[in-house]
Length: 306
Length: 222
Image (cartoon, rainbow over all chains, first blue to last red; front, top):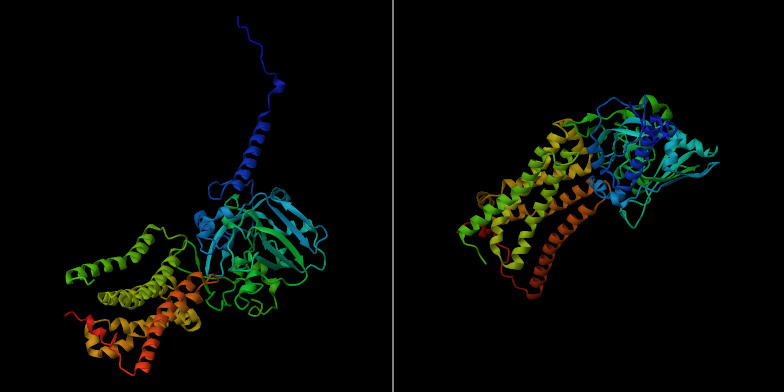
C-alpha cells in the first residue's frame, strides 16, 4: 500500500508558469538595461525588445556592428574616429534627463525609461551618409521624434527645433567646436516620420560612442545633423545657429541635406565609400530618401540653402 | 665622430631598412585587416603623414650636422630625401588607385577644384625634379651651385605639404599645427643663419670662409 506524504506546498501557492516566465523576462530586461547603462558600452550588449519592424527600413546590407561602434565622429570624446570607443568612460549615460522646453505648452523632462514607454520601439534600418564622404547602413532602435514632441504640445509660434547635446568640460574635449554641440531642424523636418529619436542599435541599448543614451537620427541629412547624447530639445521661432555653422559658415549650412550636386567647398560630395566596400558608390539625392522628403524643399534653391 | 667606410655602409643599410618599416606595417595591417573600419583612408592618410615626417627629417640633417659637427650625416640625406619622394608617390598612388579607382575625370576635377589637392599635387610634382637629380651624376652635370639652388625648392615644398594637411582636416588642426611649427623652426633657423652671415659680411667687410658653400662636394666618395 502506498502512503503519500502530505504535500508541503499548497497548489494555490504554486506560481503559474506564465507569471514566473514574465517575471523572469522583466528582471532580465531591467537588469540588462541597468547593466548596459552602468558598464562602458561595448562590454555588454543589453537587448531592447520586443522591436517592431518598420516599412521605412532599407533592405541593403548592414554595416558590421564592429565598424558602427569603432568608427565614430563624436568630438566630445576625441577627434579621431577611434577615440570615442576608447573614451566611453568620459560620458555617463545614466541617470539621464531629456528636457523639452521653449515654445511648448507642456515643458517637461523625460527619463530614458519614460521615453521607452512612449511608443512601441521600432527597428529602423537607415543609410547614414557622413559629410566626409563615407556611409554606413545602421539598424537603429527608437521612436519617431514626432511622438515625443507631441507630448510637449508645441505652440503655434514654434517654427524650429534646437537640439542640445550633453557637455561636461571636466571630462570632454575642449576647444575645436563651441560647446555644447547644438543642432537644429525645421519643425516639419523634426516631425517627419523618418526622423527618429534613437535609443539603440543592432537591437541593443545605444553604446556611448554612438550617442548614448538618446540621440537623433535624420537619415536624409549629413550625419552631423543627428546630434548625440541629447539633453535638451528646444522649440524656437527663429532658425537656430548650429555648432557647425558657427565653426564654418561657408562649409556647413543649416539644412545640410545630402546632395551629390552641391559640393563641400573643399571636397566633392558626388560619391561616397560605404564602409566595408572597396570601390566608391554614387551618392544619392537626399541620401536615397527623396521620395519621402523632397516635397519639403520644393522651390528652394538648394545651392543657397545648403 | 666620423664612421669609417664600412661603418657608414652599415649605418646606411640600417637606415634603409628603418625607412621601410612604416610602409611594411601599413601593408601588413591592410592584409590582416587591422587598420580599422576604413582601411583605405588609414593607408592614404598614413602615407601622407609619413611623407611629411620624412621631409622634416631630411630638413633636420643640416642643422644637426651644424650643431653636432657630424658632417657625415650629409651622406644619409639623399636616401632620406628619396624616401620622402617614395612615400609621397605611394600617397598619390593610393589616392589614384584605392580612393578614386583611376577615375581620371574625377581626379583632374579634384586637382583643379580642391585647393588642398592642388597644393598637395603641386608639392609632389615639385619634388620630382629633386628626386631625378638625386645622384652624383646629376650634381656633376648641373654643377654644385646650380644643383643646390634647385634643391632649395624643398623649402617651399615643405610649406605646401603643411598647407595640404591643414586644409584637409575638417576642424581639429592640432596635428597640422605640430608639423607647421616644426617646419617653421627648420626654415626659420636657416633664415637666421643667412641673416647672421649677411651681418657678418656687412660688419667685417670680409668674405667669410665658405661654410656650406662647396660642402656639397663632400658627397663624393674620396
